[in-house]
Length: 248
Image 1 (spheres, rainbow, N blue to C red):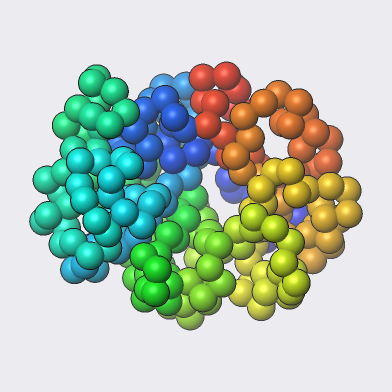
Image 2: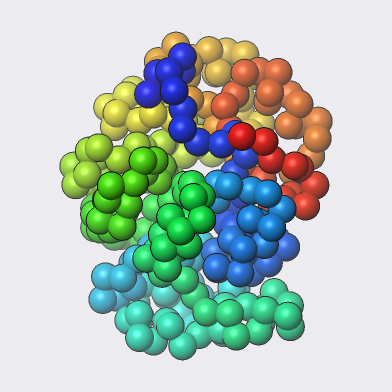
């Protein structure tokens, strides 16, 4: 996908479903984001101990559920019993963790788009990248627009590339480390997704000249949004689904 070619994704992406307005990475968050008009969602996916791709940002369960310890060390049968909503607010008590399969069913049924951040349990980067890519290829088989797979871990993206080369990939960056551009090229990425403060005229030109779309996380104020559009970036991931009205 060249910068001057067709880009199938909306410019606005709801972070972890609905930012901070609902329990992140749950179907309830997706539904709330959709109620504000969002058509594309970002989520974090890792593997249970028995290989089920499910949504969880942290390596551990304590912050966003009533579980304890590493999410990747527990089976899906164990994880499926947890409450992933009460930590946020009483209205969401009993909201379960979501599998990637459930999220795929929801997005495909509604015509929504997905950015899957591959978020491996430490030490399982390659295994997670391959398994998430295989699951995405199966779940979105025949879909007109596949999910965008992103990760901060080049090893996870390389494993996804080897497993399902046809799925679009994006390199996530929290800094412009040496070799980032060459890494994104080697991984045949279609996008570079940066911490939004990193983008300037020079870095946007570098990314675009190399054939990448330039996306930003996590953008929650109007001045930053305007700066990023003025720079010619292509997409914004935001928590503020209640503040920014998304367009196509």
